[in-house]
Length: 472
Ligand SMILES: Cc1cc2nc3c(=O)[nH]c(=O)nc-3n(C[C@H](O)[C@H](O)[C@H](O)COP(=O)(O)OP(=O)(O)OC[C@H]3O[C@@H](n4cnc5c(N)ncnc54)[C@H](O)[C@@H]3O)c2cc1C
Image: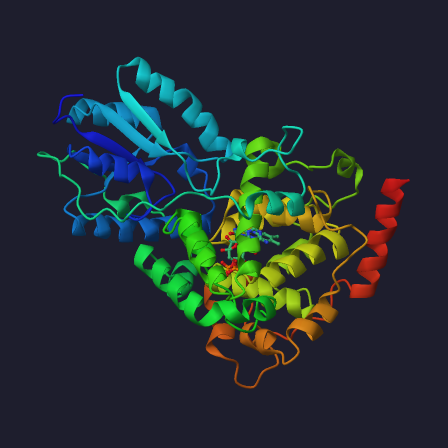
């Protein structure tokens, strides 16, 4: 390539300067670098909250690139067309990016790379947002792992390699190509009233991610094993919102954990959770149908409710089931765009078992409301909870949300934090819920709290009956 022909770096869900293989490569060429983000059909298909959070991430990342003398070019349209235009406008001879593993991105990239190459453009693709490329972790018989524990044993002592140092300078273009204003993309549009509320709780950017990790490694990691299931305390790392848009790499988190392990800090539990994320991505890569179809085909015979407008589904979505753990969790989601892992398990179990509603309805709700939405972990989480997934919880083990509450929120800290009804002076968090939800729901803090729409014992018995009929 001519020594002055620019290198285009196409950012996708990897909005950071540190541990970025493609960016490090581009910087090392010492040629002008054109950073671009493309609002293509993959971005267009994002749910409301993930798209909103991505918009916040892009805004912060643009600032970061300016700090190192560069700028983020924003383009809208199909990715191949956008890249071809940029190549024509800048004279770039090389395009680089980091791999994505979700079915939509894989399909897009599969045609895009050869199309660029056949036009004489040099393309370099680097490993993406997993620790290990999905085709490199294999069982003895050569296939991918479908069960977590052997997968965990296979990867826990592998080495994902060293992190790339943070890029501190990018050679700018002599004449920058035009860029869409980020505002014109209206990434927050579908959030409606929720945008202002959720924005207060989002923590955005690479520096914030690294700060959070450092704080957690100093103060949180030792208690993680005992605190991670308690939704009323700040006992988990909150890395998910950053990992979802790549403000931190999984390898950076892994390296911090490995260092903690060496000094005996009990980071094993945390490492295991990070490997659940990895497991989910490997599964999704090898079996993309997991995102919307039962992993175990027998489950297509289960009599799920598939009506999204059913009264029980609306009550679940609105935090009005009368089951406190479920309602607190659904409100946490509306206010913060996040839900504690134990709470995710409880609401997923209640929807799919007590309410016998198809897991896809819950999956779509999360896909629209989580700022840490991750297609792989979400699909695995839902199918695991429903019983239809790989290595799933056995169906007959139905989480009892009342017992879960007594066990994990014995002091009712979580319930009080999120449910205003019945409290004489509810905390700000519980009241914020009424600012976040659509006005059409017609809910206020004075509305009486409902009785259970489906009592726990009744729902459990109904689900078990349907399950045993399916099996027979
Ligand atoms: C029904 C359901 C849906 C879910 N949907 C998502 C989703 O869309 N996005 C998402 O990131 N996670 C999802 N999870 C997994 C988990 O709830 C979140 O990763 C976790 O709550 C994030 O909080 P944290 O970063 O504080 O986690 P920590 O406990 O601090 O864990 C550290 C990291 O490990 C990973 N991790 C932890 N638990 C899991 C898990 N059970 N499965 C996969 N990875 C895990 C995450 O990357 C997390 O950031 C889902 C779980 C369930 C049961």
